[in-house]
Length: 189
Image (cartoon, rainbow, N blue to C red; front, side, top):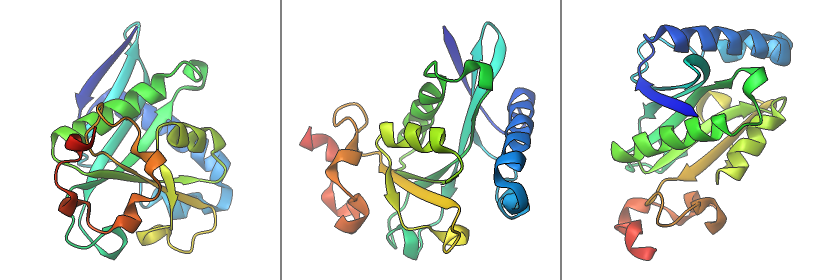
């Protein structure tokens, strides 16, 4: 059974898992690793989830709030960026990353967030599959990832988690304009 804890980036188990993630990414990203590393600092992240199996830290993820901007529908508050998702290799394929991601989304939703965005690399097909299966859709690369060929950016509207299921099947919600004007998406379900 998986135990999920909500914590912050001061958690030693989170930092140890992130060190493993960074070693993995250094191999996958090769010469591009230093570019990505500058955007993946873990200092002062307030929202971290660590997964445990048998008392051992096996997976993690985090999110940080993003300010509204041209990439994220100006004036729409509450968009978070999923960061530092990692599962130890010997625990992959067991649904743990999905549990961590779902917990991050639930936490963000509880705090009033309306959507999650993320960046992953083309050399991480297992991550792309996880996000697609979780209802994330491809979007144009945003912010510092705009124009970066190895980056893949994705987005998921949180809407009313649970009652609507995956909103990814509704198409690109970003093209609907400000989701805030739709009122409570929970009334649609």
